[in-house]
Amino acid sequence: MKKQITNFALNPDKETLKQFEDCYSEKFVVKAALMPDAHVGYVAPIGAVLATKDVLVPAWVGYDIGCGMTAAKLGKNILKVLKLKEKAIYEEVKKRVPMGLGEIHIKEEEITTATQEEYNHILNEFKKGQHSKQVLQFLESGKALRNLGTLGHGNHFISLNSDGKKVPWIVVHSGSRSVGHWVATLYMQKSSGKKEGFEETHPLSINSEEGKEYQNLLDFGLEFAKLNRLEIIRQVVISIEKVLGKKIKYEIWTNKNHNHALKERGLFVHRKGATPAKRGERGIIPANMRDGSYLVEGKGNAQFISSSSHGAGRVMSRREAKEKLSVNKFKEEMKKANVIGNFGANSIDEAPEVYKNINDVLNLQKKSIKIVNHLIPFINWQGEGRRR
Image (cartoon, rainbow, N blue to C red; front, side, top):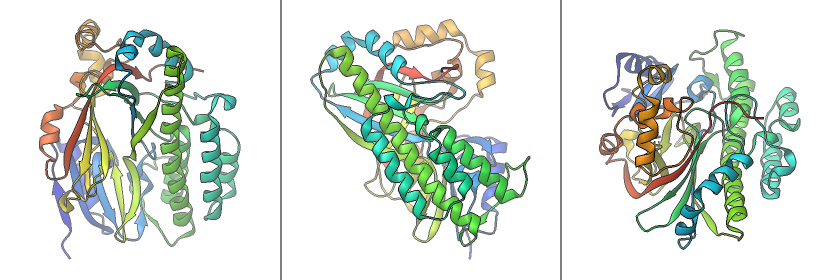
């Protein structure tokens, strides 16, 4: 039977296309699609959607299991005071949410009670499935729990935004932190049989012992990532309440992973930096720290394998950005856009110019999603450097 292979990528380079071809040529791949924001990754390109029969490929999910986006809508009558207090809010969130590269953790007593209870629930669900003692010991050690409510680094961010109706929103981009990285490393090693050089396409049969373990642990990691972003939202709300001196209402609009493998219609759909977009399904597509994020709704398009882009897509590597872009110009650009944040040498690799034109990316997926709102940031928190 002929495979369904579709390519919606905006100006992909040869390396990205080669990675995609190498992946979809595997005999266990039934169908594949490349999203508009696609660019080169490791093993599988970022923006690849790969549907497999009876196997999971840890390297195609990647290290940041459950990386994704969450949007929370705040009360519409507080935007003015949020902007008046934006500097104090910026500093309070920096104090409360650990951000940056390396082993950053939150103190256990600072994690909200609701999040601690939800963590215990997903851990108990994990115990019901097949698992190794090594993994359970790690998850019960306290190290995993202390990752909750931490942002990480790179393109992970928190933003405080407003929409066209002057309603404020919190948007978070983060994943499963060191938990996902540890899990990915362990099962890439197991699937490859190597301690080094394991970043390759090695499938795990879902009927094998290791395949069952990985699927159970993957499910845990995806829930953990969603809970991490939810705890960050909770900590940002607590920070705002402290600055304003009053309680505020909020509701979660969506909490969506874009690095995962999910069972859909009998197949395992691996999305490596691609947002699920089944009919009526809510998603978030961030543009950059200046142009904000787009709230979207899926159309369930089969050619896209019910998926959409997970962002605008990089056109410049981190090293290239640091070598070519001007820090002063970057600061001026963000000041002109009325966004406050730490815009310097440590975050220039996330400057707006590093990404593709979001309008071009969105235009290429009109058949997969519809835009329902556009959120413009006025505060940005980017995880760079080291903390704690």
